[in-house]
Length: 113
Image 1 (cartoon, rainbow, N blue to C red):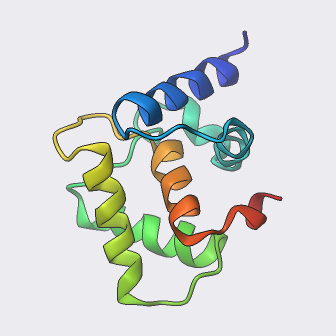
Image 2 (cartoon, rainbow, N blue to C red):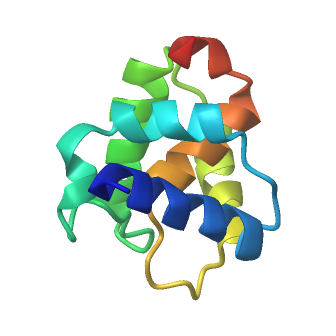
């Protein structure tokens, strides 16, 4: 198993145990690949959910630019819901897992078609 596959397995386990959802492994793989090299860096692989600047980056760079969503207060609500689902007290909120949940929330799987 290569390093990326090991990370995808870890993300799938987080989705099952911490988020209580069964992941679509094909979509999770595509979202993970879409994150690029950030998944290999300990700092960038996780989202600092308590940092407003980091949450704003998720909003603008991922939701608006990558998924093509319009600027709307529902974006903040979706990010907040994903963080809540992951668990606010969970220290390591993996970027790929949060992105996966946001893709599912907005029904934007076709972006990774």
